[in-house]
Image (cartoon, helix red, strand yellow):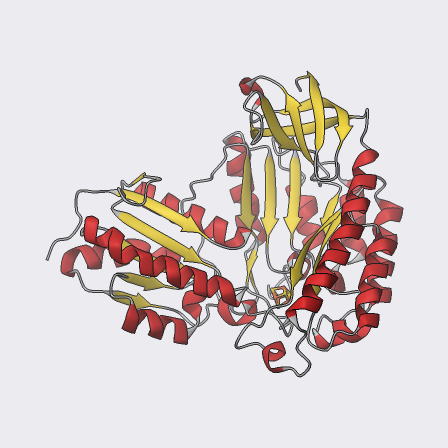
Length: 447
Ligand code: SF4
């Protein structure tokens, strides 16, 4: 049976983190090499790929609902190939459920074998049989996959896969496997190629970039990698995420301070301000350790922006633990934070812990965090008032088609007046208004 040989168009829907976005860019690159074109309308595409995320359990339910809706899409477009991949597929019970309840899904694969996409498509077009292939883990990273980056001027570069930390609330170590670092020369090669193509900004990705290189035979630290990458001509900005507080060494902080291209911006997810809860989360640092790291960062990198992640309502979190979190947020003076209410993730140790916190209390604690963070963000942003900052102009502003938006090296969102031709350039902007979550400004000159 020959299926779908003519409609060589694809639509990839990506859920979750930047690692998933980067995987989707690789799948797009693979598909372009196979002669596919992007089609943003899923009803017209010949291939739809849902790249799923498993971090939150209700996200699983939402994606299953979306997969369900493809029953109708497929009725209208019977030649559509529906593929589902990503972290959700690393859970056998999810795959079993899709297998039995969602006949509209044609291809199922996981996070470790996206490079096999051409074979999956080829086999399916030859025999029309549903194909399921999920690898439990992988100790290698497939190199030299083509990548279709979303923007020409900025790109994600994955430097490692997996995580060894097993925070008790997190499913990632089960879905992405153990840490595997890419060889530094392959990363430098990729970044050099990006620079040659005109890319100005790279974001290095890993679940815990600070432990980069620990699994490689020769000693390569994350700091050493940063130093090497800052020598790549053409690259103007280097960002990275995520930085686990327990592994953020003085050497990394000193490297950020020393090399201009490494952005003065650190995302340092503390999760809680209570040492007792941090222990239950298996984070392997205390609130004192966080204070120590933040003091060191601020001492060595003046003007740095530090953001964080907070989970409120972790099992057993008392009022005092919550107060400790609020207090630590104020002490560290974070520029902003992603805040989450703890939600049960089946398959993780925290899911079966006693003393789950009622939703009403979680909501209240979340609001208290948000209130403090909003004031802090405003205070941090106010420091930019009347300053001239360099902004990478990224796109037309969402709220005003006559303005552009972009980011400072410290990660601040800036909306400013400038012509479309500035998109993709680093330009000087004078900040005229500092708001809580963004800055407004006027472009004063190109760079
Ligand atoms: S460090 Fe913790 S939260 Fe981050 S991916 Fe690993 S287990 Fe999950």
